[in-house]
Image (cartoon, rainbow, N blue to C red; front, side, top):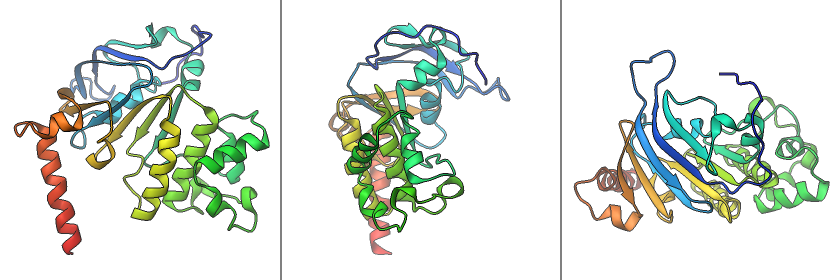
Length: 265
């Protein structure tokens, strides 16, 4: 929905998030709860993972924080302020999002990176590109940074698009980072380069990792297992992986057997 850009713009941001009894149903299906009474807190600087089967509500949580939607009930707080009281443009300035299919504008690589901070200097753009492991492919293009990415970035591979999106987020320097299935579509080589860039991006900021593949969440401070719109388990990877009754253990077993099957074929 479109919101007016009114509200408060705090002088500073820490990146702390709290969900308090949040319920959400899409306007088209108000009778069907995607999230049912979700409550949790993420402290500034923490890395938290949301895992679970597809359709369980993980990505919906990521969409509610920047106010792409408003909850049907309950409250979401950013640094203790209800997000509905914050100026939407200010709130979104504090948040960086890298998703499975990054949104690139039909322009040059440089303009796509600079989109994160329009008044950035050329050296800041270069530094962000370097940190995101993009230079190795940008320098192979005859036009370098002036290379046109095409409609929706069609001229770039999946891994290249992800690294441009990461460079944009590095330049933006957000307090809160949402990684929504950021490496799920990549081949092994691209994934290594993207994971390395993501580690640099995550440093020193609150990060929410939404993931289907559990290998990407092992190092999270806390993992929330989302099942049918509710939090069914909370803990670290080590804590959750020994509970044989829990969904996390079942997901681990399923992915382990899938990996063995893939290696045999």
